[in-house]
Amino acid sequence: MTEKKNNNTLLWFLFAILIIALGAMAYLYWNQHTELTEMVEQMTIEKEELQEEYEDLAIQFDGYQSLDIRNDSLQDLLSREQQRVQDLLEELRQTKASNARRIAELKKELATVREVMKDYVRQIDSLNATNARLTQENIQVRQENRQYRTRNEELTQANTQLSETVTRAAMLEVTNCTLTTLNKNDRKTRIASHIRKLQWNFTIAKNITCQPGIKDLFVRVIDPDGTLLNESETRLFAFESGEIPYSVTQQFEYSGEAYDGTCFCPVEEVKKGFYTIDFFCDGNLIGSFPFQLKK
Image 1: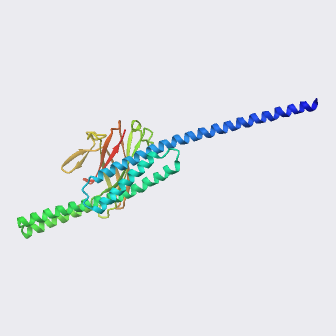
Image 2: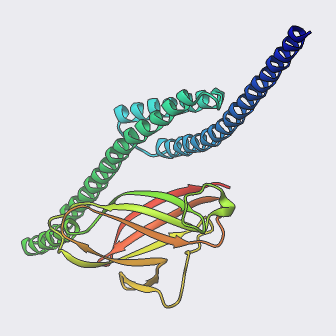
Image 3: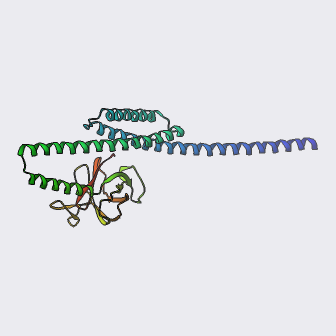
C-alpha cells in the first residue's frame, strides 16, 4: 500500500514538472514571436524609407539626363548609373522586409551610387561652366573684331575683364548641400504631417583669394508655389541694385579654408514638390540647390 502511494506521488510530481516545462516553453515561444514581429515591423519601415531614397535618386538622375551635357562618355556613364539605380530599386521592392542582410547591402549600394553621382555632378557643372565661358568669350571676340576697337578701348576692356576675373575668383561658393526634415522635437522624420523644420547642412569651398573675417550669410527658401518661406518686411539684405527679403541669416567666420555649416527654416505646412534654397554672401549668389519633398 505504501509503495503504491509513493508511486502516485512520483507520478504527480513528474506531471507537475511537465506542466511547468510546457509553460516555460510556451512563454519563450511567445516572447521570441513578439520580438520577431517587432523586428519585422522595424525592417518594413527601414525598407520603405530606403525605397523613397532610391526613388528620389532616380528623379535626380532623370533631371540630369535632360541636360545638354555635350559629352558622350559622361552621358553614357550617367545612363549606366541611372539603370543601376532602377535595377537596385526593383530588387529592393521585391526583397522581403525580413531579409535584413540584403536591405543593409542595398543601403550601402545607395551610398556608393550617391558618391558616384556627386562626382558626375561636379563634372557636369565644370563642363557647363567651361562651355558658358567659352561661348561668352567667342561672342566678345566677334563683337570686338566687328567694331574695330581702338587699342585704348581694348586695354580698358582687358582691365575691366581682369577686375571681373579677380572679383569672381574671390567669391565664395557653396559646393554641397543636403536636406534633413525635422519634427517639433528636432528629430528626423519623413512623415510630411510631422515636419516642422527644414535643416540644411552645407559646405562653403576653400578660397584663399577671398577676404577672411566675419561674414553674413543670407538664405532664401522658395516653396513649390514660388513663395519665400519665413518672409518678413524687416528681413531684407542688399543684392545688386536693391534689397530683397531672406528666410534665415547667420554669421560665420571664414578663414579661407572649407567651412561646414547648418541652417534651419521653420515651416507650418510641407507642400509637395520642389523647393529651392539660395545662398548669398558678400552681395553675391554663391549657391542654389533644388530639393523635392513628397507627401
